Amino acid sequence: MKLNLTKSIFLFSLSAFIGILSCSHQPGHLFEFSSATEKRNDSIASLYNPTVAKQKAVKLDTFFQKLHSKTGFNGVVLVSQYGKIIYKKAFGFANYFTKNPLTTQTHFQLASVSKQFTAVAIMQLKEKNQLNYDDPIYKHIPGFPYDSSLTIRSLLTHRSGLPNYAYCLDKFYDKKSPLTNKMVVDMMIRLKPRIDYRPNAKFSYNNTNYLLLAHIVERLSGEDFRGYLKKHIFEPAGMHNTFVYDPMHPEMLKTAATGYSPRRGQPAVVGFDHLDGVVGDKGIYSTVDDMHHWDMALNDESMVKLSTLEEAFSPQHRTPNVLPKNYGFGWRLTQLDNGEWLTYHTGWWHGFKNYYLHNAKDNSAIIILGNMANHSLGKVNIVQSILYPEKTALFMKGESLPMEFTGGI
Image (tube, rainbow, N blue to C red; front, side, top):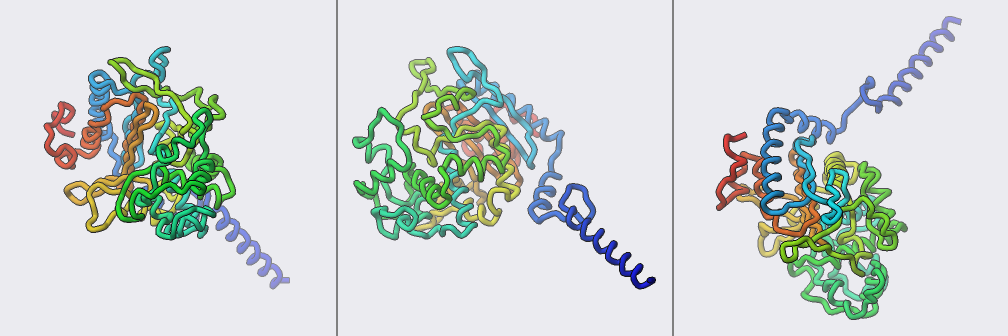
């Protein structure tokens, strides 16, 4: 009887212990373990100083107010550091003619900032062993009429030599109807447009590359590209207000800003055309808050591993030397004089002009979404200098310091 009682107590204790372990993933629970990435992000977050953040926010506001009033900046800004938002504000109109103001919830066409989402989709498939970067394109697009020197890596890094689909096939398009990725791919297979240069010989930025990558995502996942991004990227990242535009559903744009270009001193609407049905190279609409969610998702490995992103953030153009103006997988790269690399992308399409800087070293970001295609973003180096005052000499090389820097930070 005593033996049975002891056995019962032991089994009950073991069961209770296993129960504790099975629940240990819950926040604040006993036996909770943090991953290396969580520890890294917690360590970075501890560097946040609210007093310094407030000082930077004041200078950022002074700068953007001046940019809005003097150069016609029209857009929404979000700046974060150490994983925390330090500045967020909207300037100007979503629609100049109705005077509907921009808000931090307004949707903007990301233009080429969309390319990094396509690149991450490819990285996800790579992590699932569904492709390799050095696979020839024809392995994943049957009938693709070019040899094995054209690879997925060639597309990711803009080294394919393929011509721009917007021009090389222009006379074959029915411009009264939206194009689709499949239509362009089918035309390339049928017509085999001439290569511009020997594949992998040099860098040449080209939207055809990312159209093809989006088509590969569709073929390997069995999902259409819009649905894939929603399921595997937008929803996991908490980007609930982000979508890929479909010209067959213009109602999607009811909360979006209108794109403008200055013309004779007045804002002129930039209309849509047949190219707006093609995705992968452009087409994503998002908000500054959702872009901040994206930035955080890149830092916490909810998209892909940090080791996978490390390659994407590395300069891929290395012959004969590593160039200071470079490209990774879906991100532009610029090397500062101290050897550090800036990881960012710009976007310009139908009047929308954007800038997104992602700094994985300290979980910081500069997100500027604009719907007036002027030259306002030419002063983004001042924003960089406000965020990183210790590197002002690197960002402002050859330029005088503006008033925002008076008094220091």
